[in-house]
Length: 139
Image (tube, rainbow, N blue to C red; front, side):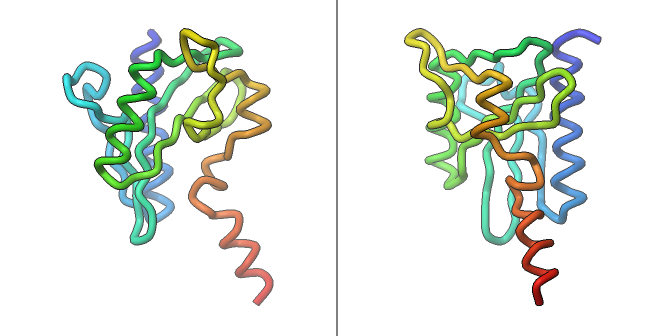
């Protein structure tokens, strides 16, 4: 499977996850090739809206060009959504990072497996599923 197909499969996996968690979610086909800023995925519920740039990689570090980060920031601000980067490293679950959590290397922004594990959220944490379960158990 080539890199584009892996990315598409990863995006579809997230769309399924969000929809099964009772969130609305769509994949924006061709998001990287549009002249207008657009994320890979839009997900939301009655309270939150998320704009997510998704990456699937077999490497231990993923880099993002400054233009890509700025486009996600711009779209999210216009749309009223939270900007997130979702990264699936080989053998790891999805990790979600806020743009501010990415490392600025000077020429790019980056995220390593270690950074993602330390600062990132799992998909369940991102949507608050763990909190909902924990709060429900205490009542």
